[in-house]
Image (tube, rainbow, N blue to C red; front, side, top):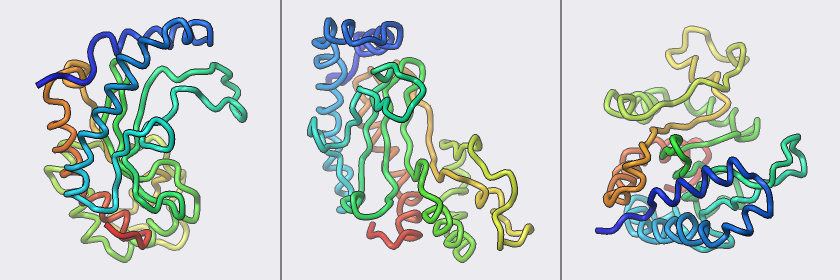
Length: 228
């Protein structure tokens, strides 16, 4: 059973983080294609059958354009940081209706000493946040099962780095999940060490995560009237 990534994958990403300029990238583009993009595309293609068994509405798409992988080039148009490349490679396993409405995704992230697997809604617009908050308020038992089951919380972190300063308006302060209603992002994730990411059983590990994260994604889909 062969691995997808290797120490050379991390070496390239460390290199582009240190030498974040077009000339360096062009000189090492072959390393990017061979050790980062191609194995990531192969991983995405291999994950699709397991993802389809979890939900027929989600896609792990290996295409270079229009697929699951994010571009390594940064969009600098509206950013004060004008460095042209990311020091990481990520992929979003997306809902088939993602272009029509906001939808939760599964996510795989490759970065030296910063790999992780997760799922959820990242930086959703305000009206989407409000829909999720209202759904949690109206369906707290389902939220407890999806996001606060003991085994789930032991494995996944819900994060707490981007919260409203105050409780959102219109919800009682004694609501059991009032802290969750303060979230701007509704995500769950776990870190993956570099050795596992470059090991021969990565696909099986991620497939287990997709299965474990599915009830969380299913709940968010229900909140947004999406099929799962």
